Image 1 (cartoon, helix red, strand yellow):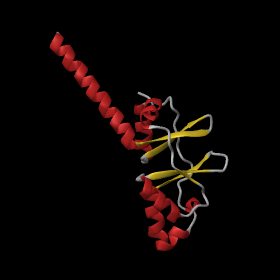
Image 2 (cartoon, one colour):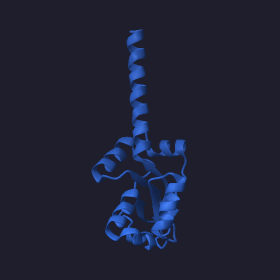
Image 3 (cartoon, helix red, strand yellow):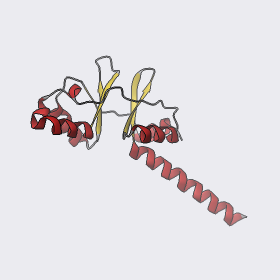
Image 4 (spheres, one colour):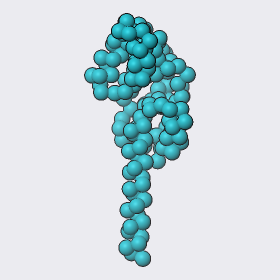
Length: 143
């Protein structure tokens, strides 16, 4: 199972923001779309960072409500790990576990083509385990 299969099922829509937009705008957008992170992109479409709920909480803890007036670039995580559509579910799960993050942008040829969350990855892994269990049950029943 690959990231490509996840994106084909869930879609390739990625919510993005510019680095100069405010944290208040980001929180409204994330609440409205019911998502836990937005990818921050430069004007050329390349990934500049990612802003997660955790980043917003940290900014609020440090600066209080005034943080909401600051640009997204002040709170976003830079040096974002990305994956490719050819990565397997297990590879992506390992990246997320070791990096301790829940959202992973997907890039192809330097451009953002999707995003996967830990929920997407776990769902696929559970489906694979259930399929394997069913195949074993069928094998045992016909043996």
